[in-house]
Length: 418
Image (tube, rainbow, N blue to C red; front, side, top):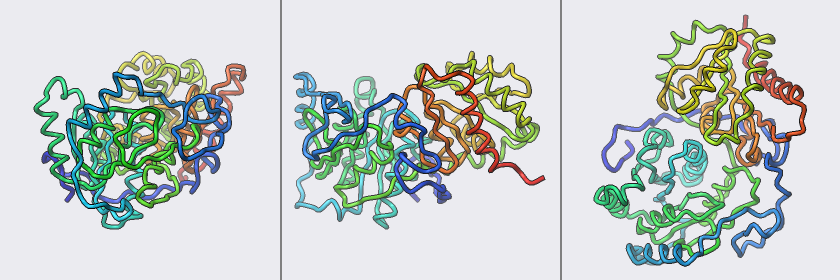
């Protein structure tokens, strides 16, 4: 049974089914984006492999430079606060115990880490993987099936320093020889860098970025429109691992799905989910277009529409719930949400955390990209369609029809036998 620090309930342990995903980055395959990048990025430029990429270099990732004096002082203090363990020189490619650090509190970022953990298991049979994650994300972190789970709240450094220090000491006591700083590739995260260093691991792998570093092995990020999973897999190169990027997969919400069956059985097929919200307002497709799409899908397929929502999205939910044959989903926790997504025949959703969850669960998903890069955040999965809707000059009716066509294609593969 996976060990956890401190002792928490046992995590999920069954192997999840492999998704039928294209064995290539998001530039191709059935689930590939219909344009290179929703933000209209230029084609990637050449790489030199030796220097961190700067926004001044066309096509390279727009990295934020943390090299201001105050930030440099933070890095220096971090080095002085905790030292690395002194051990004989090691080859990272021989490591059999690896700590992965990802402590931000956004659902999508943690889900996108799953393929990295999976690649470690496949390429290093018997490897022991520990994950240092945000305490708030415990349930989702467990679904990634680490062998050992450490939880920390970065706010405890100020609010509850004793608990923060105990968490860091628990990580250090486990003496992992390799730590991977899995923070964002496009900007330096002092929190991730410091926690990877504080682990005491003599080998710390991280992205090469402008400014100071606490890492011993650095990796140059790829082009800014590269599939996010491929970007993260680059962190495994110091360990001698080269893996093809595949969409995340999760085993989550099975029991909750069974519990939802009674509620869902009253809804006629197809059960189509609409999620009009997103954390960032610019990532939201216009509500009026969601409404028109809902009516078109009802006319074309009958069935029912289920409006999904998160905190602060009640007004969006209520507006769409007025459509015929439409119901609003009840409030859900993570497991209930996963169970509901598993039971949908189709989901139309903006670029937001639950989009990654739906794809990881195998739900047929039409992902809408109004402001973000579709080749970066869209998944090249057979059950996903990534549509770029960023052109303000595109005719509204034509845009809605594009989305409806993607829905029709995915639903055709889900139609039950009569």
